[in-house]
Image 1 (cartoon, helix red, strand yellow):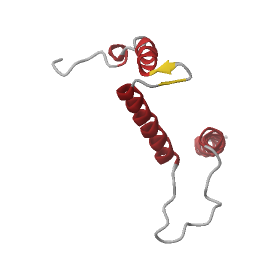
Image 2 (cartoon, helix red, strand yellow; image 1 turned 45 degrees about the horizontal axis):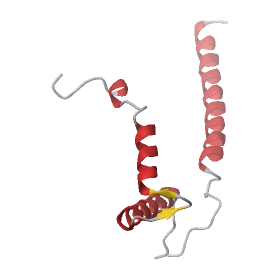
Image 3 (cartoon, rainbow, N blue to C red; image 1 turned 180 degrees about the vertical axis):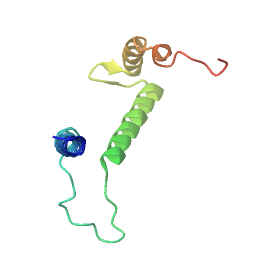
Image 4 (spheres, rainbow, N blue to C red; image 1 turned 30 degrees about the vertical axis):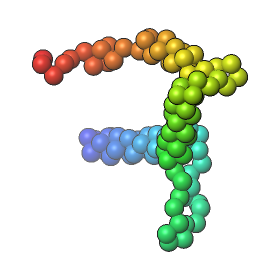
Length: 108
């Protein structure tokens, strides 16, 4: 087998491996992000589609507003008040240090 045949075989094997990896990634993405919506018909003109990010952002906004109302009015839901929520978030956030991820500063 000469050099050009080996190169051609290497190119084929790399392409096959790339196709397998792409198929595996698509499958993992569909498991992680949900089924692809490519099979759904396009929405009518002027009709908005609620994407996953928009939905998560809306839920986060509603939860934040609920937290603010609970804090302002001193309300408790299932014996959980805004102070308890704040303490829980603060306790969990202290275990995460951005300095470990970004050890440099602007001055460096």
